[in-house]
Each structure stands twice: as C-alpha cells, then as structure tokens.
Amino acid sequence: MRTLRAWNLFPAWKLAFGAAAKCGSTSLVNLCARENHGELAEWRRRRVYFEEIPHHYRRVAVVRHPLARFKSLYVNIQERPRSKKNFYAALEGREPEQLLDAIKQAGLDYDIHFQPQVSIGVENADTVVRLEEFDNWWRFVNPYGRLGAVHGVGKCNASSTPSEDVELSRETELEILRLYARDLEVWELADGSTIRTHRPATS
Image (cartoon, rainbow, N blue to C red; front, side):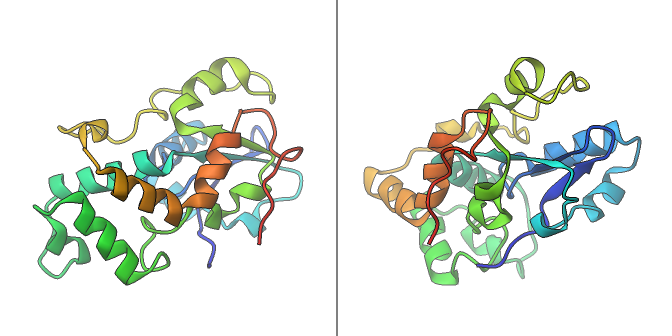
C-alpha cells in the first residue's frame, strides 16, 4: 500500500498533523494555513509524506471511524456535481452498497478516498486523536502545551445531508469494517495521549 502526502507541518510548535481524505484533512490544511499565515493552496502543496517529517517534530494523527468516513464520502458524491468523465459521476443517485461495490472493484489504492487511513503512517504517530474528539483534545487534553485556537476540525465539511443520516445495512457495515479493519483498530485505541505504548501489530 502506497503512503499519502497527508501531513501538515506547524514549525512554531514543532508538530506535524496528519489525516487521510474524509478524515478532517481539509480542515487541518485550513488550520495550518491560518497558523502559518499563508494561503490554503500553498499549504496544501506543502503537505509531506510521513517519512519527510523532521525527526524533531512530534507526529499527531487524526483518525475517523471507518463507517463515518464511508458515509461522509457517500454524501459528498451525492451532493457535489461532477463531470460525466469523473469516476464518481456514475455513483450519483446510487445506493451506498453500490459505492462499496465500486471501492472493492477499483481497489483500495485506486483513490485517496478509498485508501486506508493507516496508509499515511498513523500507526507510527506519537499521538492519535479521533476526529470526533479533536476540538476538545486541542483545547484541553493535548500534551504539547497551549496551542492556538481551533474551530471545527472535528466537524467535517458542511453538507445539507448529515452523514450520520445515511442508512447502511448490517451486511454493508460489516463489509466496510472488514475492508478497513486496521483503521478500526487504530480508531478504537486512539485516546489522544500516545499510541507508542499500545500500537497494534502490523503485518
């Protein structure tokens, strides 16, 4: 599995924050651009691979429950118009099960929204935080000292249909969790302190 250029560097704090697509990645880029007094497009281009993070930086990974991530992608596909040549265009107006079939047929490495969160290196991060708890962690829990204000990283891109309203069959849920079993394991262990003492074994 290839890795993703998904880590944002915060030089003032010597921290690197990383998140896979549909896991708060855009919100983290916005945060990075603001704290570094730069443009969003510029800091999006500046994202680095896990292996490129300076050794003296602490690495903080943001993870999302696989079912919530899948639902968020499904809602995004239904609400965002695309050209007919776009891969996702064929899934507009379809059921969630058809998105799952497309992911399985194309392969997890086909698109950044399909790739497992562990592909960005979260299992080697110093700290792993659940997306749903990020804002609270930033303000009250993080072990790295007082940081700047943050707003809405734990709230993903706004949409007219909340992703939690997407209904999945039990069979579909189980298949998603099977495909992203390592992501689920990391999410379950994430407590916002450190993952180094209880990192799950990797193959």
